[in-house]
Amino acid sequence: MLQTFERAALEAGQAILEIYARGCASAKKADDSPVTIADEEAERIILRHLHEDFPDIPVIAEESVAAGIVPAIGHAFFLVDPLDGTREFIDRRGEFTVNIAYIVDGAPVAGIVYAPALSLAFSGEGNRAEKMFIDASFRVERRAFINVRTQPSDRSALASRSHNSPQTERFLAENAISRCTNIGSSLKFCLLAEGGADVYPRFTRTMEWDTAAGDAVLRAAGGTTVTLDGAPLTYGKVGQTEDSDFANPNFISWGGRPPVLSGA
Image (cartoon, rainbow, N blue to C red):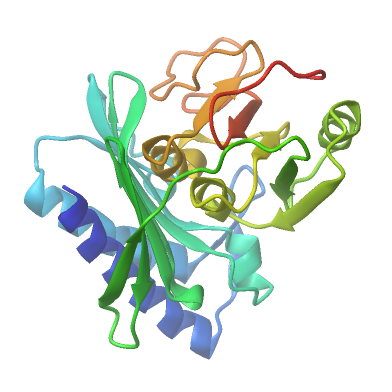
């Protein structure tokens, strides 16, 4: 399955970079989030690969959902965000990613995150996570296994560049976390997975396709993502009374097992 993910993500990333190089306009979706032709073209490529190789597995993809195309899901399905960090893409920062994840019984069991402008990709399945270095021909040049690091006493945090919040600042202050790096897209999960930081608290709204692939990489590297009550973040949340289908609650991702801290 990861081989299909890699082929789809690399082809989608190549298309995104071609559009990125020549520039494109953006529009607003119904939820006021931005969308570009790069989002739409990347999703078209990914859906083609997934439908060809796994025709019986439903796909929940961001732009399709925005267009009202929402297949019924069973215990297993794909989650796709063809261009996470569209604001970074529009602002010409390289922190945008292609995201594909496989969900089984509510858990992200396989996923890939590809940052085409950075020539890096991350994948995870089971207890194996990799960092991939992509060459100019959009092929994997080399791979390296990655793992989360042992939680130090002086933890460092990651926060959203575009969606930070006062609650995040309170969490950091209450838990004496003085070092925090702002970065866009699902790369935050990947930095935790490779031991570059220790915690990513998220107190603003996300959707499942925003987090599933990165979460899969993090879990495969030994990390965890939990809701504020300490339960694992789950996927396939439909029929929610307090939010729309596939919306996430607030969560905290850890590079390892979550400690008992304040403000969570």
